[in-house]
Each structure stands twice: as structure tokens, then as C-alpha cells.
Image 1 (tube, helix red, strand yellow):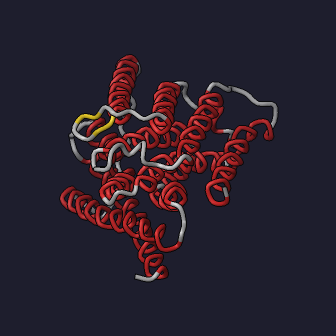
Image 2 (cartoon, one colour):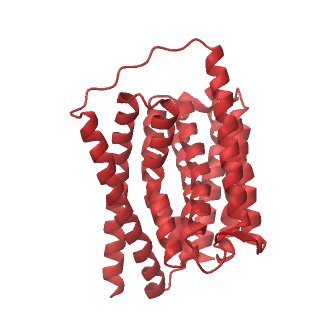
Length: 332
């Protein structure tokens, strides 16, 4: 198969995956509003699956075919791109100075994200031979930290909600849907993403072989960009509505899940530990993720700025850092 055909398949798979993920999120939002499953199960879990399914299917598919750089690069590269988009949009909406109104509650999620970034960097740099059912020590630690962190965060939010006065539930927008159609659509687009994500990983692997492009470049830049589109659109919508807490929650929640996605992919990688099979460039990406997340945590605590320039300075630093990493991966 020629390089041009492989690139066309890659692009078509990327477009289908991105479009399907947006539709999937729409159906998930409708289901979470119309059912009595409960906010955590129907909203948080369902929407998390909806927006992160492209990353999950692509990483698992790349793991199965043995391309660790695309698998890990997709998961960790998506974190970088998510934060990049968040700060680009913050610069765009700079007159609103949205980050000055963000809740300190995000510090808890940010702390979990920092811990997962450290675990990822250590797992990529150090060889751990211990495995359980083909899952490495690094992945086991990621899974443990993720679920303990989510449990503690959920308990804290529930305790705060019990002390606060409940807000009236907003009525859902009128849609030409019913619950049966929404569930059918969710399942259908989930299957489409499964196929498109698999095609994306396989064509990306072939592209790396036929064009000489590195798996790190394809996974952490090209594939990560594609699979991050649903998160980018959700963030843009939230910031346009001046809902910085929803936007930041979407980004941090997605970033946590993307590290978990790599740990899940490790179980489908049969040539050892997926963390040990990657190039050194991805260690650099994990460290940059830590740095960018730390910037988010610092500006969460900020409650005033002197002027617009000092307000956007952290965002500019983050954007420049992302572009520098992209340049390093491409030309380094």
C-alpha cells in the first residue's frame, strides 16, 4: 500500500473519529439529562467515556499491533494538547479574565494529575519487571491512584453538595430525540469510533513505517490532535459561556483519564511493558505535562492581576512551551 493511500486512510479515520465523538457526547449529554441513573453514573462516567473513547480505542489498537510510541504518545500527547487549547482559549477570552473566578476545588484534581504525571515519567524512565496479568507496576500504580483519587474527590464534592443549597435543575433543551434514539445513537457512534480509532492506529503505524516519521510524532502530535477535538469543542463552549469551572473540569478530568488509557493499553501490549518500549522523547512529554499542569494549579490560586498582560502571561508561557515541544518532536 502506497504512502499516499495510507495518509488518506489516516485523514479519513481521523475525521470520522472526531465527528463521531462529538455526536457521541451529544447523545451522552441527553441520556444523562433524561435518565434517573444518577449524576455520577450517567453524567460523569458516560460523558467521560464519550469524550475519551477516541483516545481509548486508538491507544488500545496501537498496543495490540505493538506500536508503543503511538499508544503512549496518543495518551500523553493529548494531555499536552488539551492544556494548550485551554490556554489558547483563555488568551482569546482574556478580557473576561475567567481564571480569576475559578474554584479552588480544582486543586484536588490538579494534584492527582501531577501525581499521575510523575508516575508516568518514572515509569517511562525506569524499568520495572514486576507484572500482573501482563500489566506492569507503573500501570497498576496509575490505576490505583486514579480510582483512589476519583473516590476521594467524589466524596469531597458530595459532602460539599450536602452542605450547600441545591440549585434548581435546568430543563434540557428541546431535541428531536427520545431516550431510545439517544441510546441507539450512543451505541452506534461508539462502534463507529471503535472501528475508526483502530483504523487510525493501524494507518498511523503504517505511516510511520512508510514515510519515516517517528511514532512519537504521529502519536503525540497528529493522533493526539485528532482525538482531542471533542474536549477542545467542549472547552470552547464552556468558556464562551464564561463557565471556567466546567472548562477546567473537562480538561483536568480528561487528562486524568488519558493517563489511565495508557495503563489500559498496557494490558493489550504483549511485548513487555508499554512504558519501557517507548522512545525517550515521550519521557520529555510526560515532564512537560507536569510543568503545564503545575501552571494551571498556580493560576487557580491567583485572585487578581495588574493588567491584561500579566493575566495572560502564564497562558503565553504554556502556549510557547507546547509549541517548543512540537518543534522538538518534529525537528529534534
